[in-house]
Every structure is written in C-alpha cells, then in structure tokens.
Length: 200
Image (tube, rainbow, N blue to C red; front, side, top):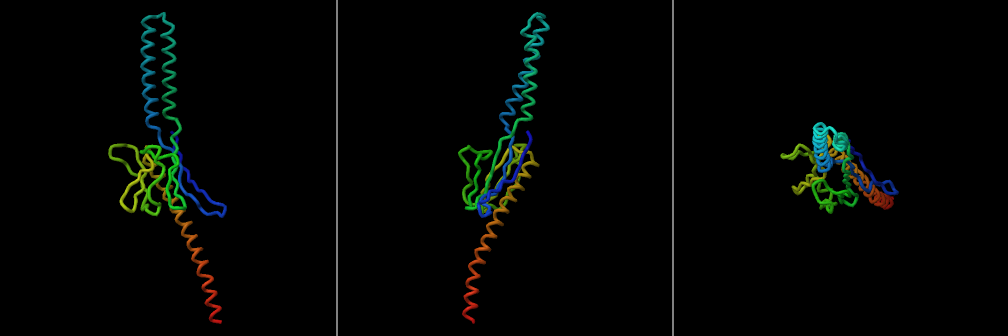
C-alpha cells in the first residue's frame, strides 16, 4: 500500500480558515490478510493439480488448474501489496468541533465526532500499542482522555500524521487568534479617538 498524507484547509469567502485538518490512508488489514490467505490456497491448489496431472498424465483439467491457480494466486499476492489504503480525514472546525467524516480507525463508522472542543486537545502523538506492531495516532485531552483517531499505520507514517494534525490545529488556532486581535483592535480604536476628542 502506498501511504498518502495531505493537509486539508477550507476557507470562506473572506479568506478565513473555516476548517483545518489532514487526509491520510490506512492499511486494510482484513482485506490484505484475506488476499494472502487465498493466494496461499491458490498455490497449494496449483501444486495439488500439478501432482494430479503428473500422476494421471492425461487429465487436461488438472493441467489447466495447475497453470490457472498459481496465476490467480500471484495476482492476489500482488493485489495484497498494492491495494489502495482506506482514506481517513480529521478536521478541526472554526466553531470548535472536531470531525472525522470517514470515521475512526478503531470505532464503528457511526462515530464521526470527537466530544468537546479542540481547545481541550493538549497534544497529538503517535503511539504504539503494546500488543501490536502498527502504530496509532491519539489526541490527548486536557481532562485526561485519549481519543484514537488513526490506526494501522507504520511508525513513521503515524508520526507524519501526528505532525500534520498538530500543524493543522496550530494553523486554525493562529487564524482564530489573529481574528480576535483584529476584533479587539476595532473595539479599542473608536474608544481612543473618542478620548482624543474629549481632551481637545
């Protein structure tokens, strides 16, 4: 599987950042295992058909099976290594919500939102579970909660997703901060000009 990881930025007509996030791909573990298992069965079936052909010497069906089954097995093995990954997206929205339109790695597809707001997120890290070789990406929340948002990733890929998510959250927080500063500046400017008029 070729890993992909891309930043996602959505802006409104005024150029304000409305959503910031990351899109990436995860391995399809069950489908890959099924392809590998069927490939192994195909090789064994081809070997058995070849043995039957050699023993019977006149069975055309055994000869065809001895050729066809390994070809199918090779195709399945190739597909297991090159199948496209499952796409995932995590978005931090301007209103404070955090959504996963394509679902989370370790949860039912009906879960598409992180409870609370993204101001509760303290850090985003790649994390290896003790019983697995793959890594996950987790949001560590201010109240102590841990939300697993990505899974079935190589350690380097999990690190990349975590870094890109951190950059996406930082970009949104900085954009919100700039807007708050502009709003404060607009509120202070009229007061200052009014005071200047009173002094005169």
